Image 1: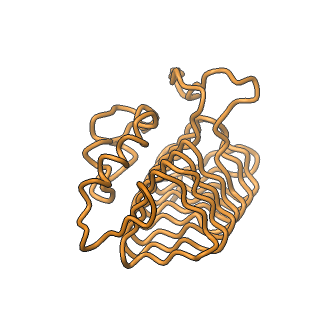
Image 2: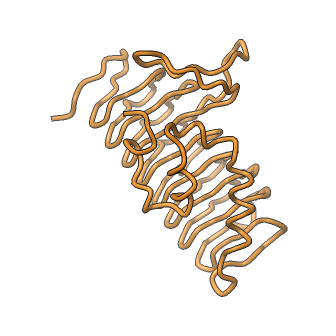
Length: 218
């Protein structure tokens, strides 16, 4: 339930061939920056503008003048980058996405139709097709003791990485003001209640409730 194959439909991102190389999605985090630079050089110049060095935006993307976009970055067709969005760099943003007001992105892949629309922090994370994060929800990507992140499942999987945010499967939905702790994995079509503090793996088609109870959707 926490492999690339089980979490994502790779037809909905230009990073599909890259992600297909890996068993687990967090293994792809280290190469996101280089991937964006490589893909950027191949983009059709009739469709994409290099609006600053190594920042490519599709001509149909809507980017507010107050947004900050660091390199490297790709912004896909019909994506909206709203007022005061802070894209620190190494962000591959798909088609029809929303990067909202005061949302911060760093070292991420957002599949097509992802919404991070209000006051979100998304770092060292991969968000699948039509994933959504409610207002104020964030991915925590570094443990308090700065030790290497472990995926808490049965059996546990050491990542060997210090910075791992959250892996959201296709259609995952995170409620407002929730915190996804380092190494959280949310399966396809699963929901997280608002104000939750999530740790570990939520199976596909589940609901994570405020007290940590996980129930299967009916």
